[in-house]
Image 1: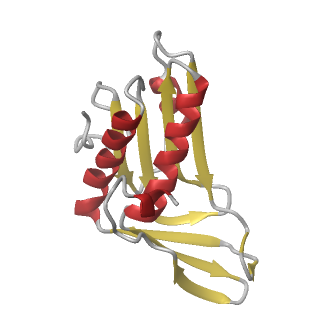
Image 2: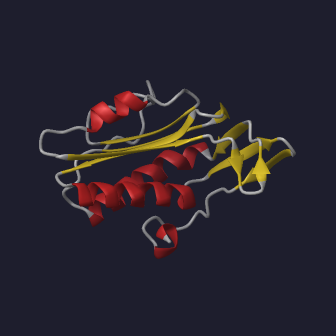
Length: 166
């Protein structure tokens, strides 16, 4: 499986899993095109974008993402491996995340999953994004009209544990 691509992290190396952490904008159309396979009739793509508010924080203008770089791609690959264990017929899986300063409307994370049928594609995509949010060491600093603060951050647990998919 692709465990990242040191030459160009925003391009897959050619097999069925693409994981990447990059300060570059995410290639959303490329991810969706790459995930399509002839044997798969379903493709689910989730894109998380920076929104202009958070709970109790109107006027969000930017998010800044930092990551424990050496741990992110192995954890993303572990999430993809666990998804394949749970849904053995999956086609391609892409899990990409941004770092750095992002403006409202920019994509911070992309998940794409192809499968023979929609039920597995939806379930696996949801599992992947939910598990990324709780188990991958990426943190964000929100800047909003009233200030800025670091929020969220992964509870770095075991991929595939019940806690990771609550």
